[in-house]
Length: 254
Image 1: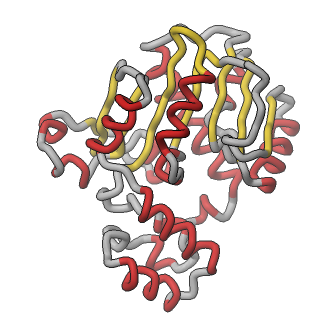
Image 2: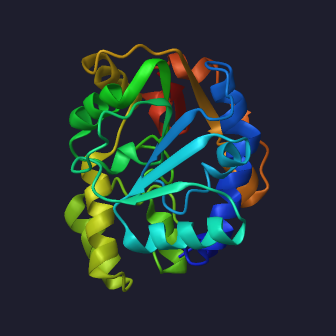
């Protein structure tokens, strides 16, 4: 397991810096960010992405099914004396009581959801008129599109392109390297629900949403915080059907 997935305060800080430096400027191209705006993050974890919004005076709400993540978020925000709302619940079961949001963030989450159509419909319902959904995720075919970086095995967590192996082979490999049942289950679920550009665009269309802007990256902006690499956008390859799925993480506003 890479250190950031073990020491969650590191992960929080990385996400917070990426959000401040890249996500907020990108979102601000679509909608003016002002104090008291309602911001929701789906699958928020420790809420690192929301932290800069909270510092700007936005009313931030993070929802996550993990009790540990929500508990860690409360502790981190309390230590920093920043106000935020935290909800531990399944997104599909929580009652928002007709609440609407100006911005909904879905960062590295949608690839984990099996019923993606249901999620998009729900997010659309929670969105204010003229609001936007910011969605960023790794394409399935990219080197670490299977999220194998969460493995406890150093070799597996640093091995690209192992997730497209046949399911039986992939499962056996994970077990042989000592991964827990929970980790194996999660990685196989991601293998089942991974996204391509084509599938994602069809999903957005089926949810009656319009694409405001999308960006493909050769080096993801978040990798600057993780590995010290400078972000690089992709241009020409984005027009190459299917091949474009193998390199770039995908970012979009809808």
